[in-house]
Length: 93
Image (cartoon, rainbow, N blue to C red; front, side):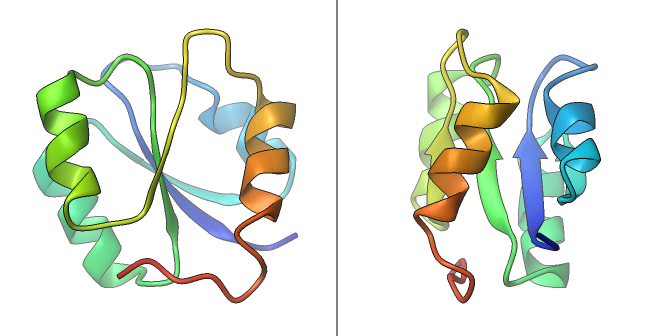
């Protein structure tokens, strides 16, 4: 699996290390502006929004990109399973 994801979080470390070890190219973002910049640079990346992100910020990102929102109980295995439902050619617009 060589997919790219943008991992939006307010707290590091996060699940991003485990996702990287599973073969994903993970770009971490701690600000909305970073998410938008990374999405421009990597248009095929899936956007993951960690539970630590405020609802207002998560909603703003979701207005522009398809997102996968995580709960506090999320695991790397669960994220990988969810990402598999997007398909290999899924893109973020």
